[in-house]
Length: 111
Length: 119
Image (cartoon, each protein chain N blue to C red):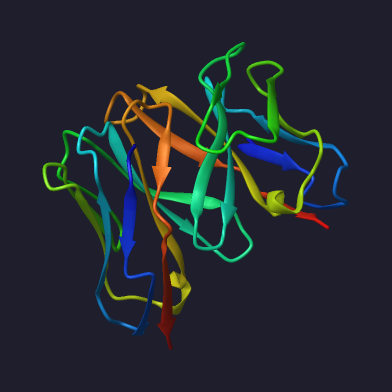
């Protein structure tokens, strides 16, 4: 069974810092990996999706990388802002039908 | 385009009561999912439906039933609610998307969630 781990569980940084969130998975035969953002009391919003054949994806200040062979992905957030405060989750799928989620990293950006 | 909608947003049940959570999507997606989210456990898949007319168990199906009513709607039923089913429930949908620049990937879209408390 696929296991997904996110470290750290919580992170607090001052505004303007660059930061990296980590996601690791045990079965490297994934179809794709997706990063989500979740605000308190809300649903999940998709940020970036990386196909298994890709190495990275970028959207604005966000950059996600994937090293499938080592079972790792990172989400890089440049020039963090207080509005980035949220929980970030990663999810992988091996088949396109079942998605496995990490427990998330709770990010606080201090003004 | 509403995306994925869920009703109700909040619900309080007493142990033994039953209820149905409703989910609908307007994106013409084939696959739909029900997850529960608990502190420290992350999201866990309860049931999914790869296409209209099919349903499959996920990681934590016990105590739940589902119905894929049509391509748009996927409901989750608790026949006899238990306090262990207190959770936030999310519905999601996905499809093999060949129209995006990167052809051929599954991207999940989530509803806003239902917060269920069983006393």
